[in-house]
Amino acid sequence: MRIDRIAPSSPTAGFLRRRSSMPMWADLTWRVALVFGLIALVLLLHWVGRDGLKDNYDNQISFIDVLYFTTVTVTTVGYGDIVPVTPEARLFESIFVTPIRLFVWLIFLGTAYNLFFRNIIYRWRMARIQADLHNHIIVTGFGTSGQEAVNELLARGADPREIVVIDGNEKALALAEAQGCNILCGDSTRDKTLKDVAIHRARSMIVSAGRDDTSILITLTARHLAPRLPISIVVRNEDNELPARQAGATTVINPVSFAGLLLAGSTDGRHIADYMADLAGSGGRVNINERFVLPEEIGGPLSAIQTGIGLRIYRDDRPIGFWEEGAKRLQTGDLIIEIKEEQPRPAPTGDE
Image 1 (cartoon, rainbow, N blue to C red):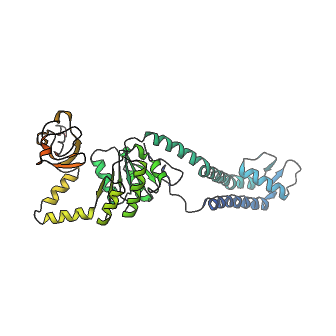
Image 2 (image 1 turned 90 degrees about the vertical axis):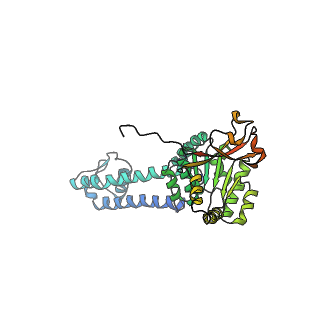
């Protein structure tokens, strides 16, 4: 399930390819010119060495005969009506004309592939991949924040085949591809791009476009295509947090503001920032987790859960702290925020 292994009709997602900056007509023109240039070169050399040729039809070698022999020889192996008879002419055909013939055919085949077959293959491959995309995570923007998000998802055990990265930078996409993710080179503000990655079947979306206005526009586009999709967005300017929420973001993260909170907290205790990083990352001694209340926990207090230390519950999107009255009796549909200890690693065997 790989979308680089897709190549849509717009920017691609199929085997990662950089779209040529040369227009298609110019690309086709230089290919045709190269073929005719090679034929002209062979024609000139055949004309110069025409004494080494024999026409089995009339024993006369005219310019038309040389032109005919050249075109037939370059495009096929010839028909035998005009043949090289001297050792020099045969050596010339063997070591010079034969490689040119193969090169011309490679140009023909490459042009046919680029203009016709590649799009057919990519569309077929893309249709197969799209059919397999269910409950996946879409990451739009693979800069510093996007890369960190994907690294953390993978560290938490996410299958890279369930992550789709969208970016307009081929080098960034190459990094995501190296991690095993699906990739799509395109513009996430366009409906078509998000439809290409089956946004209506995704389980969540991370937006980190590098510019707040672009991230907000992506969020607007995604929200109208997937009204219930959880969307997390990164904004750098505090003034853009409210517009991001109004655009439909479920979670708005301001790394600058969060860094300021950690810096301020570190003035009162040098371990606070370390502990917060421990909570947020997968490699720490403790992890923070969000889950729905279990059937056996309904009716009991938040403090009695067995899977971790309960910090807060969300009931109808309203936060309730562990010290509040509402946390003394869990209800169906409650979301629990808990701290869990790091999962123990298997003990080494005697052979290790």
